[in-house]
Amino acid sequence: MADDDLATLGPAAGPRTTSSDRPSDGPEHPQPTPEAVPAAGPAARWLPRIVIAGLVLAALNLRPAITSLGALLEEVRTGLGMSGTVAGLLTSVPALCFAAFGIAAPRLARRFGPGTVVCAGMAAIALGVLVRPYAGGTGGFLAASALALAGIAVSNVLMPVVIKSWFPARVGPMTGLYSMALALGTSLAAAVTVPMTEALGGSWRTGLAVWGVLAAVAVLPWLVVVRQRRAAAGAAGATADRSAEKPVRIACSPTAWALAVFFGLQATGAYITMGWMPQIFRDAGVSAGTAGVLLAVTMAMGVPLSFVLPRLATRMRHQGPLAALLGLCGLAGYTGLWLAPAAGAWVWALLMGISNCAFPLALTMIGMRATSSAGVVKLSAFVQCVGYLISIPGPLLVGTLYQHSGGWGLPIALMAGLMVPQIAVGVLAGRDRRIEDEV
Image 1 (cartoon, rainbow, N blue to C red):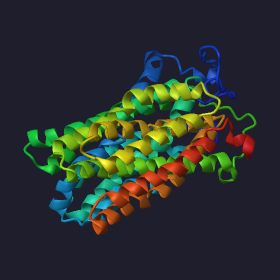
Image 2 (image 1 turned 30 degrees about the vertical axis):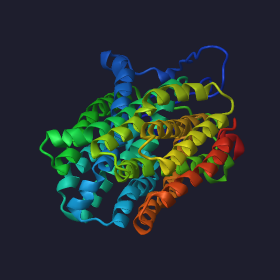
Image 3 (image 1 turned 30 degrees about the horizontal axis):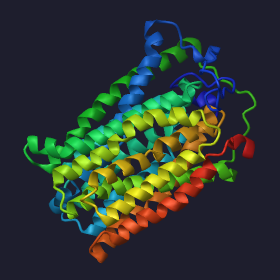
Image 4 (image 1 turned 180 degrees about the vertical axis):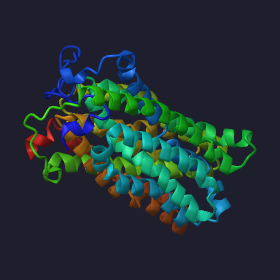
């Protein structure tokens, strides 16, 4: 995918700029290029700020469709007559949709432009979240969820390339801002879904559907971005850097595979946490409201850490130690859940929240392991699609083990065991390599 495929959304990457990708003793200084300057005019001058607003609003909407369901999973299971295995399948649907639809993101971006695709993704999230509680039966619920998750999938893949394209010298800070907003949306949905449902009359259908309003708001800045970039392209013509971009056979890169497996294992843990952690606490005697707050605490840990971690990662030549530290926190958290889930609930929630920050670390490494926007979009699609495929069996297996064993001992042992290979591949993915150099 050439850099001019990104012109519909924002400026091309221009000559290779890696000042934010490699450690530096001094502050980051963007290097302006003609391509990095939008067309003249008041609206165009505001466009980078509108892009930032769009990034933040999009990030706020990339997890509430999942975490709001986790908070009300027992009510949804009862209302739709789901078994434990089907509920486990429901918690696996996000990973399946992310893998299936995420792989189409580069092709869609080439054809329609990334801005248009992200805008359509936000609209799909809004429609799916609004419709699914009233779609009728488990099949309709899953179909509407898949629509929302398709919108999340393409946006997941394109966010790193939007950042690399618009802010090539500020990958760390902008990834931190995006990750922080994503964590904020995740934690808010987990924290307020149960009390908001009670305030709105107690129907789980209303409690899930209300999150579609936030997604509808997120469409607005992307409409402005798409319109302005099309106007600029029509007035001046879109130019792009075509200098010496070598074809990248992404599947031949060891770093791409290490990063994909790392992404997959951290996604497995994250979706098991979002889908099942409230149930673990509720089965241990914790009230539904408190269990939702505990999940919110886990997600909220990502708000400050997701802002700081990418900035720290971009200043390190090897991000492996960070991956190892996050994995060790996960091991400690799962051990606590197994030994004393209720007594130390707040501590385990905090540790799991730290461990879940492997996600912003993975996003940051995607931006650092390629030298151009074209490389980033290929790497992002490969890592996320392969990673989410790897993560599909995890939540389903947890649900099956829980149903057949009658407790959480085996599921928690599985979760803890997966942290060991996650640490190993995280260290490999954190090496100072570029996929273009490897292939």
